[in-house]
Amino acid sequence: MKDSGTRLPDGCAFWLGAAAVFAALGGIGIAVAVTEYHPPWPSAWFIAGAVVCALGCACAAWALLLYLAHKEAGNHWCPDPRAHLRKAEQRKPAVPEPATRPRTAATGRPGAILASAAASRGDLARWLRPALREMSGDLRQAAVGIEKAQREGSYAGVRHEFDLGQIWEDSRQRLAALQGQGDLYDALRYAYSRIARMHRIVSVAATTPQQSHDLPVALKAIRKAETAVSKELAELGLAGLAP
Image 1 (tube, rainbow, N blue to C red):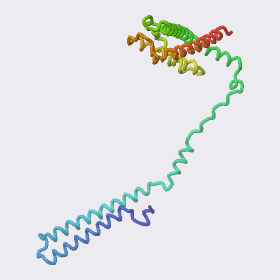
Image 2: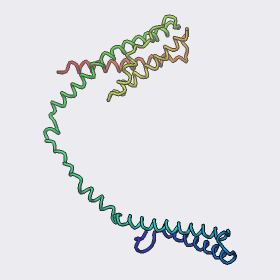
Image 3: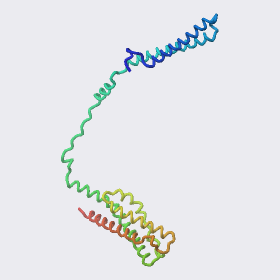
Image 4: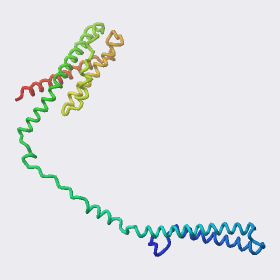
């Protein structure tokens, strides 16, 4: 939009045009009343013309109000709003650059890093070693139950061999969060699913092993998990003996 000094705002021009139209229509009605009626005041032509002329006057008054408001606002508008952004950026306090760390502090001593790693390994072993020992016992017990069921061809003597302790529920999330222990977690998770399936099979009063029970597959998964647990316990034991 151009400056208000060169042309009227769009709103003002519209209302002035409407005022002119109403004034013309009202003038026609009044002219007809004056020509045809004596006196013209009570005639419908005169009353309608007067009302339409009044609407034209109202439109003209509204156009004048818009013009004055636009002119007053134009006196306060900034022609370049980006100037305020530049001034605000200039008023911002300078952010100090972070102090450069000494090279010795950034690199650190190899001995300190090894000591920190050893401490972390020790914290891990404090909860992982007991958990793995209990899981190892549950795995051996489940393997014995499967071998007994295969040997006897019946689940009659197998009832509690597939009961897993609470340690499995308490430790699975922590094992999943361990870094570098993906193989151990996968082996334990698969063995857990197989033992839980055997527990369900035995719980529904199944008496004879079926081919669909996949006993050899379950036994293989349990043996693999046992191997992974034994390996991790050995590593944890060596870490506990390290100076």
